[in-house]
Length: 400
Image 1: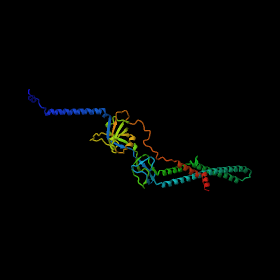
Image 2: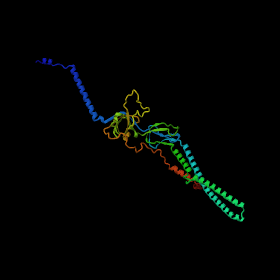
Image 3: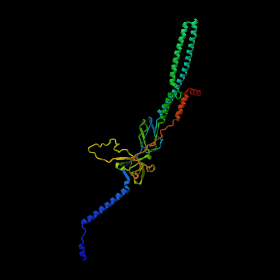
Image 4: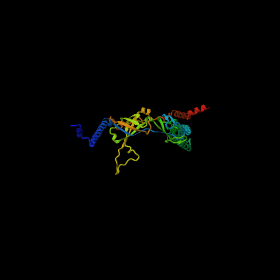
C-alpha cells in the first residue's frame, strides 16, 4: 500500500482523547501527592503538634516600699540591670530616725518605771515584816496585861487599849499584805529585762529600727527594670508599686493549643520554639512544664454562655506552659509578649498530663528584705543595763 494511503487510514487523536490523557495525568499527580503527604504524616507529621498562638511570658516582680516616706533618690531606671539586694529607691529617713530615738527613750523610761515597781515591792515586803512585828508586839502586850488585870495591877481600860492595838496591828498587816500582793502581780516572776512592759518597749525599739532601715528600698530579684512609676519628691505609702523587674532568665512560653491537639501531649516532652524576633535562624529548646487546667474562655472575665438557641461550636484552646533553656535565653534574650511558633514532639507519651507531686522548692524567693538585728539587740541590752539600778550607778560614776 502506498505510504500516502497508510497515513490517511490512521486517525488523528481528537480533543476528547487529549483531555482524557490530561485528566489521568492530573489524577495520578494528586494521588502521588496524596500518598507522599500521607506517608509524611504517618512517618513524621503525626508525631508533632504545632501552633503559632504562642507568646513569651514571665514574672513581673513589683517593687514596693514597706514604710511611708518621701522619695529623695532613685538609683535605677527602665532597661537598667539590677542585682538582688541593690538599692533602687531611697526615702527620707528623718521621721524614722526621730521615731527610733523616741522609742529608745520610752524603753529607758519603761526600765526606770519597772525598777520603781521592784523597789516599791521591796519596801512593801519590809513594811509587811514591820506590821507583823507590830502585831506580835501588841499581842504580847495583851497577854502580859491579861495576867496583871486579875491582880489589879493593870486597869480594865488599859487592857482594852491593848486589845484595840492588836486589832489595829492586824488591820495594818492585812493592808500591807494586800499592797504587797498587788505589787507582786505587777512584777510576777520576772526581772527587769524580761518584764512585759520592758519587752513591749524593746519591741517598739526593734520595730522603729526596722522602719529606719526600710527607707532603703531594694531589689528583691535580679533582672531588668521594665517599668518605673516612682518620681523624685513623691510621698509614697506601703503597697504602692514603684518599679517592676523582669528576671529574663525565668522567661517561658505560653502556647495555646487546640483541644484536639492535647491527646498525646504530656509533661516533659521536648519542644522547639521559634520567635518572630530572631526568625528561624534561632531555635529555642524547651520542655513542657505543665498543661493548663482550663480553657481561656473558662477563665475569662465574662465566661461564654452556650445555653442559647443559636449555639455554634467553637474549638477551644488550652494554655500549655513551656520552659526554655536558660543558656539560650542568655545568648538570645527575649521580651515578654513576643510572638512565637511552637512545635511539640509527642512521640513519647509516657509522661503524666498533670503533676504527680507537690513542688518542693519555692518558685521565687528573696533575702533582700532580711535585716540583721544584732546591732539593735545590742543597743536594747545597753539601754536596759544603763537604766537598771547598777547601770545607773556606773553611768553616774563615769559622768563624775
